[in-house]
Image (cartoon, one colour):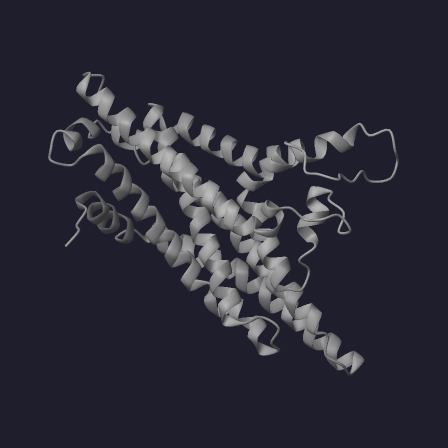
Length: 291
């Protein structure tokens, strides 16, 4: 049976503290306040108008899921950026690597511990997300897909943070670099996509007959894929074409038709690269005596 001593140690130390419980409680309080207040507004509006606005429930679903996704994006880099650099600062990294723990096992153990916490965040938020089932509109399979991609995005962001943590000696530096990289993924790729239209000579929005190379950068952005999944479930699959400035009356290409699959596939390859470089850097530095 597969056992990772690093993972077991991290789980024991993490869940013995009150800090993680407090974060989970605050996380769900924020989601519950948003969800219940919005649901109360929707119900009062239904009583006033005498009819049910099912689109409002879909908007509630999108609102809660978006807030949860953004909160996780803010939490994950702060958790994982100190995974390796923190051990280095405590001068325990050399001792850990001197045992039978391999650099790959150390990296995977740290990542799995972070994902366990993320999974706990996601599962604890299910009662709030389930508010959308009161009036229908979203199936259980839709919710499972959304939460599954949320967990996958946590792996994506967590792997890059752990990689930076292995390369930089100080936790402060690795944390800043990790948040900077996430900011580039979320904002930088959007800017690259919008850049060709910023200096357009026309006043009306510019549409393309084919995707520009800059538009393909959005496939690296987990927020775009997450946003597309939500809107497709809510009955607005054309939101991706609008983001890419690609008219509906032009023939779609293979990547647009299978955006989710391509996005997950490419992001998965990036995850493997981040983990590979992190483990290799630890191994090379340890055997060269730099720790």
